[in-house]
Image (cartoon, rainbow, N blue to C red; front, top):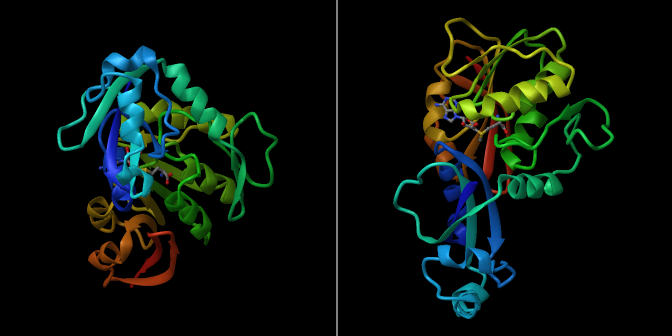
Length: 280
Ligand SMILES: C[S@@+](CC[C@H](N)C(=O)[O-])C[C@H]1O[C@@H](n2cnc3c(N)ncnc32)[C@H](O)[C@@H]1O
């Protein structure tokens, strides 16, 4: 069984909270649910709901003024193990893992991102296909931070490091664009590794080496879609060229010290920023 919690958050904080939660160990997925009453109450899970005695109370709560104004949202976080304290958890429960994965599969459709067609194995692929099986790893191509990295891929690097590989989406795209490149993947969450291996195989590519930490050596290009604190250390990796994403808002953009780099390109989507940097 897979566990889930429902977390209530102001709409304005939902994006950054999701990002924080994604970085915790054992997170399988996050669904955003409009707090407008469309959330389905499952009587079989009623005993898990910590705040409500039954459906009526729950529905009443969803229809309160704060939710009708639409300034709050619910995050349904699927996870294994324990979540740390500090979140406003309003309910918790369990689902069959198949339910969760079936939902992910329903929502995952092929799309054009930059020069790539990114989609699931059961759809007819387009040009430069990057086939991704929805699993428990981040990186289906639906997030703006991933999309901007894919759009920024350029040049002819030989040694490419994909830091925080998730599903492997960025390195699979790199292998499609530069068939002779040499890939190294770093992913701290070992639960992502089988998904990475499966996705490389689906794309007819050999599975590259995957590490928990950056191995010794130099690289021509580093790809990293991750949060600010980690990006700061990513920029110390021995490489002349970086494509980075995951900076949320102008404050985080300013907080990343890029003085040693030329900013070749900067993209913004919603509140997210991505950069192409070359070491001066
Ligand atoms: C936002 S996801 C990016 C996934 C994919 N590269 C993409 O662009 O869609 C960030 C990934 O970095 C991994 N990660 C977090 N901290 C890390 C660290 N210190 N070292 C390596 N990987 C890390 C997470 O497990 C997660 O899979």
